[in-house]
Image 1 (spheres, rainbow, N blue to C red):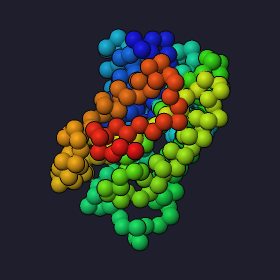
Image 2: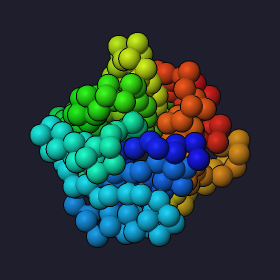
Image 3: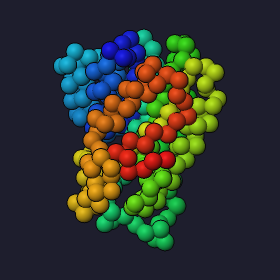
Image 4: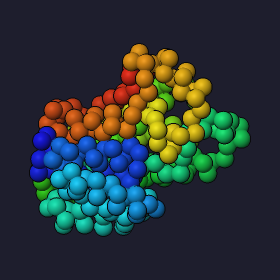
Length: 255
């Protein structure tokens, strides 16, 4: 039970990667806040599955772009379980990895970039500010931000998404440097192609095979791969690591 007695908040946890992260954290002893935006039924199913396995969880509705809503969410989680120790910024706003429909740069408008920056960087600013007082009460904390290996290997040019995730990398390292003296670590997991989630479902079989064939481990990632890595970074196993970018893509990238 690597996280026994800890309390974790996972954004965008009603399905896909976020749900897998929530379940893995709970399986290792953490009480989990399952954040959702528009999927109360799916969030309730994640909570029910965690509770059915003997864990503790609560569904928490909030638009992570809204600072007031995020503060209320963090406070409610702390009330429910006694504090907050771990934050996982996973929420993905309105994006699908469709290499066929993916627009070329010259056809894009700034609004598409701004939407992803708000849903990624603005959201992380809100959540980190909201949990920091709770971290200080507990004497420290762990932040894990979910990035993408497209930052270093743009095999498909998802411009707006990758730009926002790249900005999150810079934000994460600055935050790690500032909060280190307070025993708060900030690390990043850069996943590869994770099958199958709602966002990755449009990825064509041809693209899947290209990625699989170029990956040293010769397989695509699964949501639980990300979940297990989050557990390590949230626990004392990786307690001396901060500001680190961990590529979790079977060796496709080696940054």
